[in-house]
Amino acid sequence: MLFRPLTSVVMFLAVAAAPALVCAQGGPAWADEFDGTTLDPANWDVMVGNGTDYGLPAGWGNNELEYYTGRTENLFVSGGYLHIVARQEAYAGSDYTSARIRTLNRQEFLYGRIEARMKIPSTTGIWPAFWMLPTNSPYGGWAASGEIDIMESVNVADTIYGTIHYGGNWPANAHSGGTLNNGTNFGDAFHVYAIEWEPDSLRWFVDGALYHVESSADWYSTAAPENPRAPFDTPFHILFNVAVGGNFPGGPNGGSVFPQEMLVDWVRVYPYETTQAPFFGTPQVIPGVIEAEDFDSGPDGEAYHDCDSANQGGAYRPASGVDIEACSEGGYNLGWMCAGEWTEYTVDVASAGLYRLDVRVASESTGGTLRVLFDGADKADVVNVPITGGWQSWTTASAVLDLDAGTQIMTFLNTSSSTAQYNVNSFTFTALDPHDLDQDGDVDLADFALLGGCLAGPNVSTPPAGCPQALFDVSDLDGDADMDLQDYANFQRGSLAIP
Image (cartoon, rainbow, N blue to C red; front, side, top):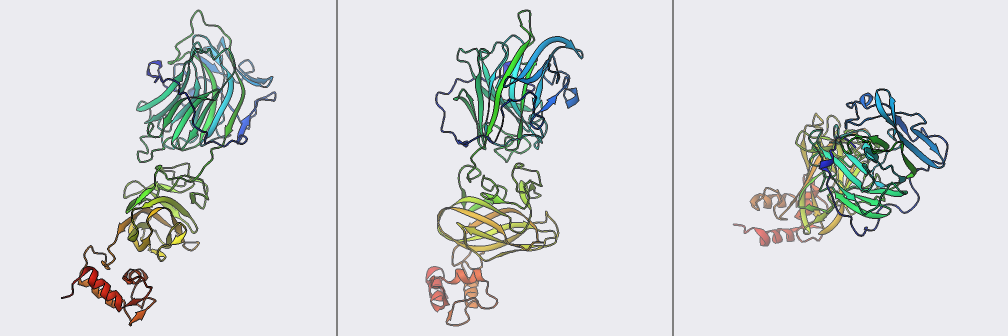
């Protein structure tokens, strides 16, 4: 709805068939049926003026000609409909009046099916819109934080536009979208206009027929280049308005007819059925580096658990409840992990065997502990997080894990006491040679010495003092759960000829 010239609209043909809906098939999570006699203030904020009171240039940033009011001449509820009426009249320095309403700070939505049944106006110079803007603009000013246009029409209502705006702050903004032009004058009757909004896609419908799709590969925000879902991964609110004139339709002419009215029968929002899924769409690969902030998509309790419901760092994935902040090592980190918090990652382990896990951690004053589980099973001892003297003073905590091959759910769990907190930046998995006991990349006499140091007798089932459990485990080369002389023999035969 902002700063979009007519010549820059991207044109697409209608898509013939819609995919199966992912959104919930039950009742709406929120709706306004406009069955009363007044606009519900719990749902709607009435915007007034020419835009300057909202930080926009006069004309709402688009050189529009109307002055928005809350008068019953322009805005009312009657007969089961919301009425927005654009009139040609001198008022507050403008030649036209109309109305614009929004759900800002009242009703906000992240993902789902958003739809309205409407009858739109049709004449030269008219511009009705059903659209969405971000509530908190976490990625910056328009359009770095995004805009979703569910339905726009200009002039004679023979074309419906569905558009998204994204990129950088104006004028470094971008947009893309599609149109439906099938010979219908959409001003002649009611039609249902809808989007289905998911983490990686937006789909536009008219009367249940899909006509355009955008994916996260198509959009971006310059404020979060590492996040493929930005800026459409944060709560948005709904707007209805009827503009007169402006950059997109141009102005009315001698053939224009006023008043013009938009009728809204109802607006409904159906929840998105969230299920845990890999953040990038496919499992992350082990061996390799997993950035801690790239935990699976899904709700709290399914893909993660955080002590509070808000992203206190406000970065990268602002709609998530996990605290994420910019990291001094580059990218982002999980911040202020408190006891009982966890994140999950769908991973694909290339081959079974031993891996060293290096976790980049920082803790200002408390330190803590963590565990890493695969499909719910412990694969290593508790990993200790040391005190590093600062939230961005990073060090590495390590463990050795014996992993199975294949796709699994990796769970990072903070097992610290209730007063301990730390930050986590990344998990690096390196495949190990089981004979390289000191993990220096070479199998040599130093490894043989370590093996001998962990033997306290001919048959040992628990690690002796001074022998870490992880080293003891990988030194059990025959896998019989005992450290014994047979392991010496296996070590010598497998990797090292003793002089």
